[in-house]
Amino acid sequence: MPDSHTLTVAGRDVGYTDYGPRDGAPVLWCHGGPGSRLEPAAMAPAAADAGFRLIGIDRPGYGRSTPRPGRSIADWVADGLSVADALDVERFVAVGCSTGGAYALALAAHAPQRVAAVVACCALTDMRWQDGKAMMAGPATVRLWSAPDRDAAIAAATDVLGADGSKMLTQAQAGPPPPAADLALMQDPAWMAGMLEAMREMFTYGVQGYADDRIADGVGWGSFDVAKIRCPVIVLHGEEDHVVPVAHARHTAAIVPGATLRTVPALGHMSIFGAVLPVLQSLPLNEKPKETSR
Image 1 (cartoon, rainbow, N blue to C red):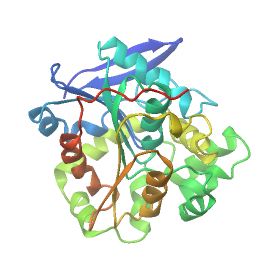
Image 2 (spheres, rainbow, N blue to C red):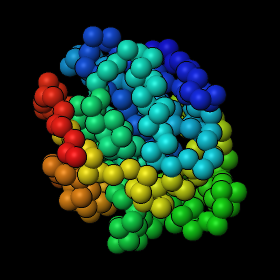
Image 3 (cartoon, rainbow, N blue to C red):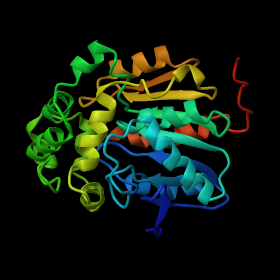
């Protein structure tokens, strides 16, 4: 496992792991919720062999990153750019999975000259789309979105997930049966061992990171403007995703200018991760960013 590092940004700690190689095409990885900088670890060796340098970054309240109560989605952009600066990375691809999809898009909207492409994988869409919000029926989302304040959101998240995340797997098992491709991953001892290791980082600060994620995305994407995105955007989704319905991907592809939708039959919310590397390999990474219209 590559070493993890901590950077100070505006008086806060930001944790990240650089999976290398240093001469690879850089990819800033925006993890799911809950998640951590360790999320891309499983695919990092294959990505390195293909010439990509994956850089996992903890959002506030996860792993090594200090919580930031009241944060918006766009507030995270400075963290991502600070990590890129610390690694002398000027241009990069932003990959965002599940909750992280919005953070990858926010990077592209706020720093269009630095983001070469975005891959939004199994990602929630803009929750200002009320039909899409209504599709997210799980208690870990609905209860937090309806919480009157942060303390109530943290209490709801603790009740649903456990203070240390110990209820997360139990909750998953109590839901609808996962698609076969996801079930195969869950039955793989190596994959499950990696998940359990990652869970320790997801809940370093209890459920604060998760509660703040839900507070931030529950109000929608008002903190960034997708119309300012100038790079290629691939919206990647498994057609059997039971966590975030594929309708979210279709909506995102419809509202992000020039986005390309790629749905994959039989894959679900976890198994779709295996499709990210082929998408990265298909991207035109040498194209210059489009000029921003005035």
